[in-house]
Length: 159
Image (cartoon, rainbow, N blue to C red):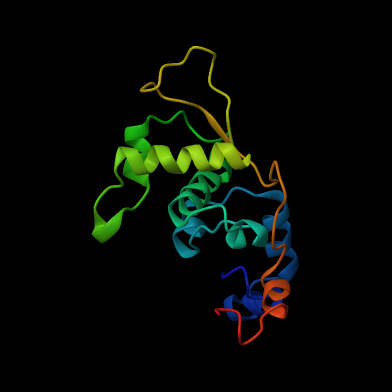
C-alpha cells in the first residue's frame, strides 16, 4: 500500500476489512510469513523530513532505512558498523555507498536530531554503534507539508 493511498481504497482493492488494516497500522501488529510475502513492508515518513532542505538525499534515504529497521521485526535498530551502513545504503549505479558518504549521512542525521547515537561511552569509531531514529527535529522543521510548500509556488521562483 502506498502511504498516499487511502486505507479504505487499499482495503477495497485487497478485499480486506478496513478496521483490520487500520488496527495493524496503529499497533504495528506482527504478520505471519504468508502475510509478509503477500504485502511488502512500508515505512511512514513525516512530510517535513522529505521536504527539509538541510537533509541531503543520501542522508534522507539512510534515515528511511534505519527507521524501517527500528520498527521492522525487532526491538530497534541493531548495532551497526560503518561498513554495514555502506552495505544497506544503496549507492550510485548499484554499487555500495562509500564510507565517507555513509559517515557524512550519519553526521547530518545526528546533527539534525533525526538520529541518536545511544552507544556506550568510549565506543570506537569503527565499532558497531547503536542508533535510534527520531521523528522530531532539534531545530525548525521548515516546510511541514508538501501542499503547504506547493501553495507558496510562484512562476518566477527560479529567478
